[in-house]
Image (tube, rainbow, N blue to C red; front, side, top):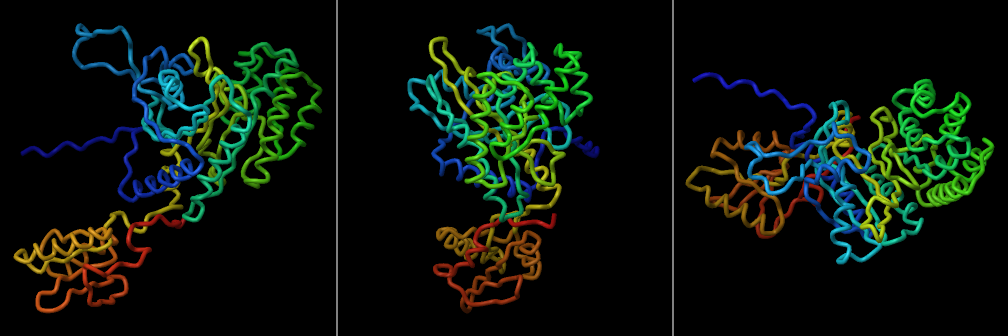
Length: 450
């Protein structure tokens, strides 16, 4: 028999080992619980959308994976090309339009699903990855206070992971109206293009942005310097507005954006001090953002880039007669997990759910061991039965390799006993009443060594 060829890994499609999956699951459960505490409801959308819909919001075609049958196309009944969704915002906009008559507005939803993006895999960037989104959508209008609420929800969700090793986060906020009003005030006509160029500041630096603004966006050297000066402004109070106005530009759009930005950072200073601050280099490259925009970084891991981003949009969803403005944020779960695992800042107490391994004296007595496990499970205690009736020492090692804390010995001529293999303590036990300590019943995620 020929040896099996080695399977080459497929880059960009992460598959965690059980320990990594336990960390990911803990993060997902934590953010899900926080979202629900704030009134967000869970939905799921299909994985595919018509290609024309996917490309209508500023995404490039090279990043969209197309869906087609292996066989020929002669039996197709429609002329739509389908693609896998590259984010959860575009399919959510379609979902709102299709179901508007059944939804109560403002509609608060969260959505945790896989998405696919055909880009070059690198640290924290994948072709298939999990996102966790929250959005609030209104019908016709959406009050500004939701632009304040959403980054605070994210701050709470990720902040609640601090006790298990999560590094601190910083949420940088800006407002598209500030940039739009400023660019218009200095005579730059290509507002959207300028925003996309400014959004590359971290990647190509000030010199690269300066050249790009002049080459691609029609900026004069003076306009390019003014745009870079705006992008350099940061702060966490009303001084941000003073710094912008000191650049010598005033108009209605700019001042409306500054008013909103100051409201946001001042509310955040009270409710999440030290977490949220204004940073006017934040532009967000997608065209549909119209108000507040957000980017989140892990303190100490800033080179990873944003782990959670989003913003306000006014015309992403429209049926021609009515618009559905919204604001949303998306956590890049896979990017976050990859860094937490590689830096060993978060780890599970064990990779398996099992708290008790029931030993098997011999195969003739396996039914007795099965009965013990059944009784424990009925009381909510995760239990497994040893795979073979090996010597007890080997069965204990089987549990130890999996970090299962307890081994149960079904008594044949006396009472059952359970052994804590960490301490060596062994006591009489009854499966109808014995329970492990609360901390051992289920695996927990704790801070690692990173």
